[in-house]
Image (cartoon, rainbow, N blue to C red; front, top):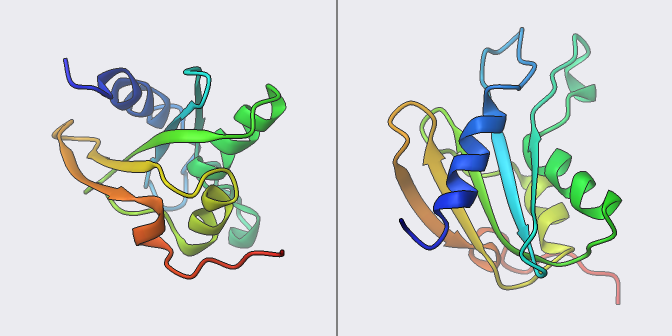
Length: 128
C-alpha cells in the first residue's frame, strides 16, 4: 500500500457519484486535512455550465464545513488524470502552500503524476 493509497481509493470511489449528464466527465477529489481526516467531493454539472461545481471545490467545502482549514494532500481522479482547473488551484492554495496534488486515471486506477500545489500555481494571488 502506497503512502496515499487511502486517498486515491476515496477519490476513485467518489468520482462514481459525480453528476455529469452533459460532459460525462466524472471527477472525484479526496483531501487529507492536517489532522489526517479525509474529505471527498465530486463534480456537479448544471445545464447553465457556469453554475457547475468542480470536485476539488466540493471537497474543500466538506473540509471547511467540518471545521478544518489546512490541506496536507489532495488526490483528483478523472479520465486521464487531468490537473485541477485554474479556479480550483486558487481555492486549494488558500488552504495550504506546500502539499501534494496526486492525479489518478479513473479507468486504469493508476497514479499519473504528483505535483506540489505551488508548482501548479506559481505566484498565486494573495490578499496580505
